[in-house]
Image 1 (tube, rainbow, N blue to C red):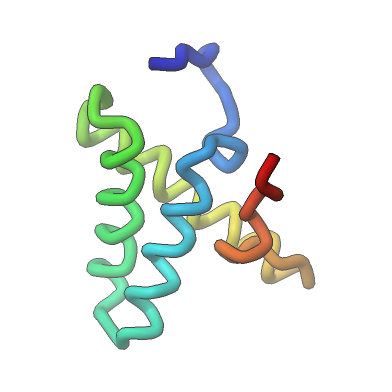
Image 2: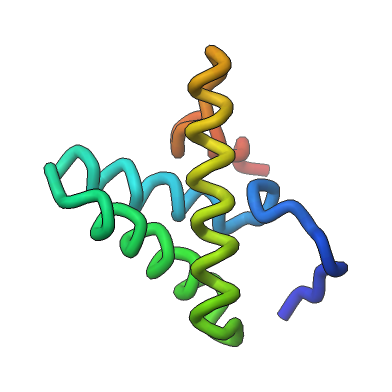
Length: 87
């Protein structure tokens, strides 16, 4: 388990890729908005099973909102954009 300091940016967490991918897949499947967010939360919890549901939900929603905010400013925070090159 990796410990992060209080106030770390959830959008830089390795789970962010999976959160965005799950959210986007749910949107593309035409699921209701709440199910799209829940898909993101479930992806976060798979990566961080030790976190409480409330905290995990806050982190996942922060990642999703960061992606939406960046997209609104003309940027792109999609699962494809977040993927890190393999070493």
